[in-house]
Length: 419
Image: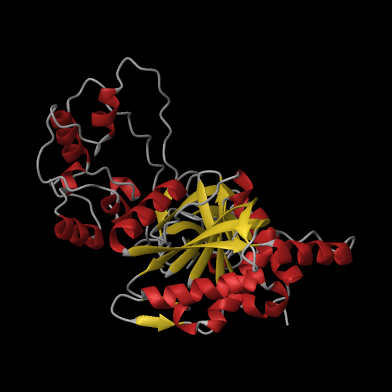
């Protein structure tokens, strides 16, 4: 029997993968371990190796969206006759045709009817995953009015998560933001550009909308003095000159947070549905913007790594994130994240927690501002505003305050966290 090449599951939440490119063509002889094809998931681009030796045949087309576990090609040995795909095996799907754009002349009621028609099986049954159906029932959402993003228009969890409750038909008197046709109708006659959602943007939208609705956020704020840290950073960069890249303030922030998670172990925890998981090591995530979305890069055992090592690891992960070349373990996990917009001149902001994390530190720009010194007089200092967003299910107010105080103490007394 020929070897079946299947779409692998490389991500915890992955349901399908889109084929970006083949490294070999039909009729080529492939050896086990050779790069075979590239796939795009919601979060990354991955290279898939050949599972065996053989002549490549029946390859799925570039651009096809293939469910996990389904065949994308077959490998035939020299003794096997090459014919159609083996009987009983999962057939390689054809490329999904492009969907037509919405009818700008349609009213919301007509758009809903079109969606009901387009999202049903020939028997009239809606195509939706069991999880999507359960979420829709719990949230009172009409599946017939949701555009599915899964294979062959199947409605999946992400589609339900971002959809508002649609029990009643919208009317022209009440603007409805639930369908493209309804929103685009409002802008008839105005110039606009339609930007389709890729897998990453769709996933980011779904996860953050769900997080903001489901996670009970509260916020703690501190103004952190950075004079001692900036002095230590300048001396360290002089010593490291020519040997490694310069240390950034963000490197110190990551190190301070990693140390604080060890100092306040109750904050190093995540919500796990019906229980709390206390984490041992400090696996700190760093939010990095990429085209079309963002990654939270996970720095494992950050409390044990020297600053120069952490700095180099952050730069390496950020470069590969922008090229969509991360392995899942490099952007999944951790109990806590850092989001820094200081380089854009933002004074301060409130960040949205990215589950399963239980907190995230939003870091603003460092600025020279007036302060009261130890003698009660006025002085100036370099300060930075930081806001800790906290999941109240995991961390109570007093514990969150203790955690933020530990972060602040580490940054204001940076030598202590390095010894």
